[in-house]
View 1 (cartoon, each protein chain N blue to C red):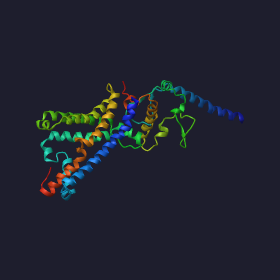
View 2: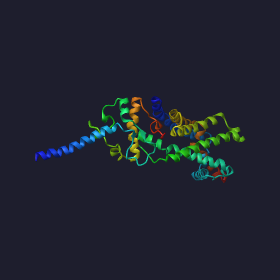
View 3: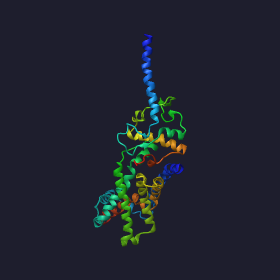
View 4: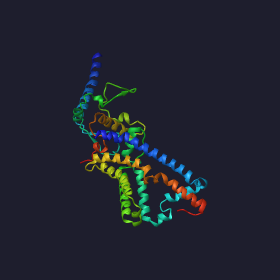
Length: 128
Length: 219
């Protein structure tokens, strides 16, 4: 009985670890900010080299960007692997709200740090 | 660049809005006081019916004789003014920036439509510029300030389409876009651009006099 419960536990843990490893590795290959919440784009998608950005910006903790809130409180755990739209699309006006939080996430940090793009066209570059 | 962006998208927006709203209100109040002193009789014969009748005829394309006499000017002027007012209010990028700052939002135009409307505003400015140079009576009435004012109106649209299409130097164009838009709002109550707020009063005045005193049409 005990043995089978342990086996069941491993059946849960192993895929979870694999998923986490895949998610962490996949970050390195992220080159564009894409979200299934955008059915159609108002502007071209933003190019974003995840690892290079974080190295340059000195970001070490995942939840600096991948934040997780519960009852309005910032949690220690990170929301890795989740799209922003999974929380932020149920706001007051749908797609505009999603655009708003994406901009606040990137732009307000760039303005605080006085580094990185802030104008529309600096991020939403036309395909070259 | 971050400092100037922050300035242009922050405090200067407030300065521009306060000068625009405050200046407009102040000038309209002063106009009412001056009229009371120098032309008090207008308060006697002012009529909402004749005022609205006149305004209505002058905001409908070709609704007045003078508009029918100059069809090209009428067409350009209507297209120009509609695009000038609608484009900035319903531009996607502007609606998004307002949503970011104030948490309110409304529907916005497709980019391609806004693009065409911006080009129409710029072409309108070119038309008015040529008209001031070529047409003799208009040239006679033009002052250097009128030409500067045309530039003030054209600048936010030229730099806006420039930064949208990411033509070379678009980052500078983006900053100039914000600053020139603010400059236009600041200029509005203190220049010829004030016809935006004066229009209903000048028409109302003429309409009341034509309808109530002369018993004639003023369109």
